[in-house]
Length: 385
Ligand SMILES: Cc1ncc(COP(=O)(O)O)c(C=O)c1O
Image (tube, rainbow, N blue to C red):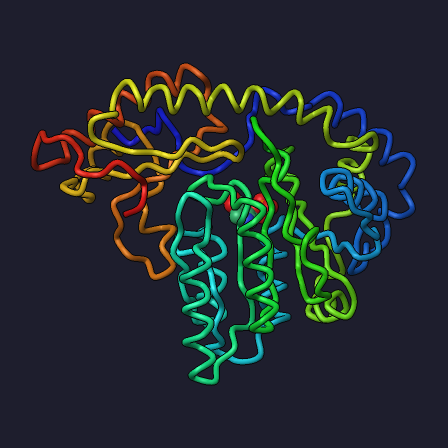
């Protein structure tokens, strides 16, 4: 069978809460009102209304004032990831620090730019500061300074972990000591389910070289292809100097700006409970079906559950069985900074229906059991040793 019945593959927003009518109304309005602007190129910074709406989004959450003229609208946050790397890179082979498990799009972009990635070990609080310090010290001894640290510190992809505030401060202090900029990718911000919200790094890091990346993909829809960079001068100019595409989609920006003119919370209040319920169904399914063989994260936001597989799983066999049974996930190897085959899988729960989740997890559990060489209980109690 090649049909995908249970698509836990790509991180996407919930389709049932997509605000079709509100966006249709916004489109009619902005096309009439901004017809003249639509006949022009948007320019490097992009649609002023969307920059204002996103400055308000970030400022309200973090309790700081953001200048909309320090925001650059991009073609999804993926363009922001690539543009910032290009701006900070000086040579092929330049070093950057990344989480040991990170977003495959970023890893792919950095590989294409021939950046040398150094993976920082993770625990349940995100990047381990002791390991980061060790690597920064080692590099300094060799006369090498990393060009930047790429960090997804909130609802990390793929693990879902959130770095606590105290660790964020330690990381910023360490980055300042070794004079390394941080590129903060916060594309899951506002996909929040429960508990306190940790501050974004940019709200704690006063250094002008700090770069912040946001997105509308996860709070609205990836098809809009809208993201942004928040960077202060002179970093702002340095990034803009790398941009040669005359700006991002003005129509999509205008529609999103109109939709969010009163803030982003109203739609988040509709979408997040639906996503939270899907997270609960996913983790409850794992608890019922795979508690004796797997351990997984319980994310307080974002779109992913990271699952540790028993050591004796034959991964090619698991991939084959899952495919034959219509179950799609992304294997751990896709997230490892060196493409290492690791015994993990990522489940993206945002796009499926609730019944697909309920029916799919038992299918996955059966495939995992069948791909093992024993029936023994797992030999670990945590996601990481
Ligand atoms: C951490 C991270 N950054 C960036 C992106 C790119 O998202 P987009 O370009 O749709 O904003 C993703 C998508 O999954 C992601 O997980």
